Image (cartoon, rainbow, N blue to C red; front, side, top):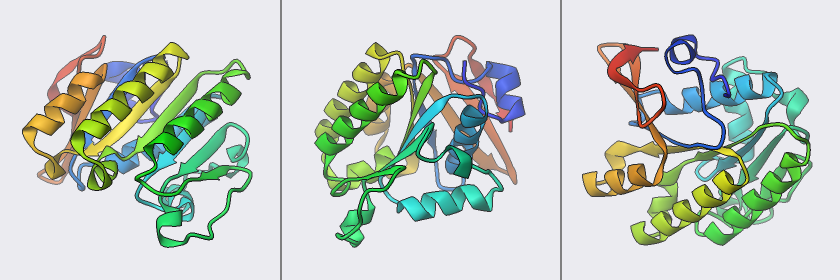
Length: 219
């Protein structure tokens, strides 16, 4: 079990199960990104390895997002924390790899994402620690690829990660997609973490998990 660092969630659910795939679903105000950043920081503190795939932000923007939340990840970068950047080269073609970042050609490069993810998963799994993949986000990928292509990509990535014993978390902005698309993507995952902001309070519920939270609970 990988703790999220969000006490109300960890108390109710326990955290993120190993070898499971999770969809974090909500709109822009729901706190999806904050949830994922705190999950990453908590996983690293607990000596897990994390691979973060960014499809709509540069690697520098991702690091700044951690820093703005006072989440210190610098000591892990290049060791137990690595980033796959599938965005920067779409706006800055000269972007190059570094010790903690693998640069891809953009959100259209689904093959590149899956290959880089598999390679990093294999490398980090050799250390004998739990590995967590965070993919932010499905919604950006769907701006560049048709839904059927994304479904196949998700099935492949989820299948490969589960076979390797790796936990995976995918973010989606559910308001950007039709109910049919949302439901199809949910069906690919083991569990769905739904987040929302209502009356100034953020809350969650969890479906398809060993410990379901069927009523909205405050974060």
